[in-house]
Length: 118
Image (cartoon, rainbow, N blue to C red; front, side, top):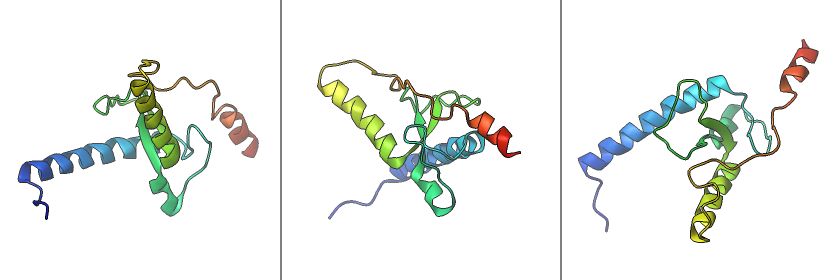
């Protein structure tokens, strides 16, 4: 049987949850609800599957302009972190401390499409 969490653990978990919900809410207001990697769109109940990824992998780096964030679905977010783990264990520092270098622009042309709809 495991011990119940200590008061310190509970306070830390609550603080982390508040911090995450704060920058997540900001990111969801700033960016379209589309995964930046696979391009899937999210809304309604499925919006919870869209996560905020820190490009530099530093969860304390949350600039107000959102420049360190990108919205990724659960699957792409997990894949991004797994790539970092794999690179670390393979002795390859490629991408350590940085987001993966994406060559395509997932939202390229979005402004043009939105203008056509108006």
